[in-house]
Length: 339
Image 1 (cartoon, helix red, strand yellow):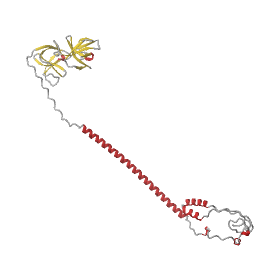
Image 2: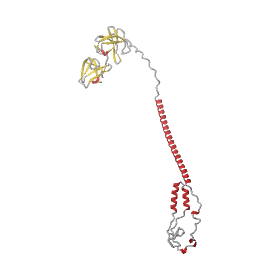
Image 3: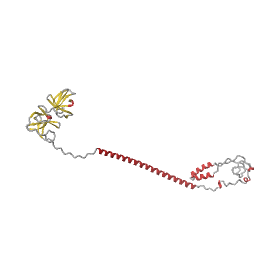
Image 4: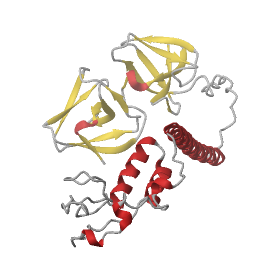
């Protein structure tokens, strides 16, 4: 450094010029800590990080103390100082042979570090994808196992149901029913027990070989209003009807009593007693519908004899065959209390 007054060359950090006594400006060295921070930042930017920082830190001296404020007088200065100052010390950083990393080497190291980082990131991504795929496969297998268990349970339930309720073997269709055997025919020349007249809304009454509606042989007919002889043969009850054996102009056979009015009454007994209720009077009719021919009526509270003739459901109601003071006919059960 030079004196600010006489321009003589002086030693570094001398406060007073030994030649002219002029006070010199005081200088300070930059603290090593600040140098270390700057070195680290520069190393991070150039990629040469640790090498440059280590070099700077190892070659920097500790913080320099403030130059002593004690005035050095020219008399206290050595002769060597007057001749040009001390020669640089062999310990000076300027005299060391050191090698600092070049910029190209720092860039190359940074590139390798980036490549290694990218490779690590790619490996991490592949690992995450593999983990996700493994979790998806595990979930799928769990679902398949649950489905298999449900199917096994359903199969077991079906087997149990089949074992408890076995399917019946197919049954061969039944053979057609054979025609009913004809009822034993009464012997010819039976006595006449009563006479009857064909009544009702029919034009003629069929004379049949058997006391059946179907599967029988028609042997003749009796026109409406004609008279027949009722022979002394036990009546039959079938197909919800009472059948009697009659003779009409030499033709004998079974006819239903539904369309006959007997001179001495239907040849059946009494099965019950019926009392008229909840109506002022209840009509007795010739047939089993409300518009049929009116025969008589029974006041409320009075009773009738319910004969042993099968009950018939017709015209939306049930009908029974009754007898009331010698008059026989059909009466609705809607207002008849049968004991």
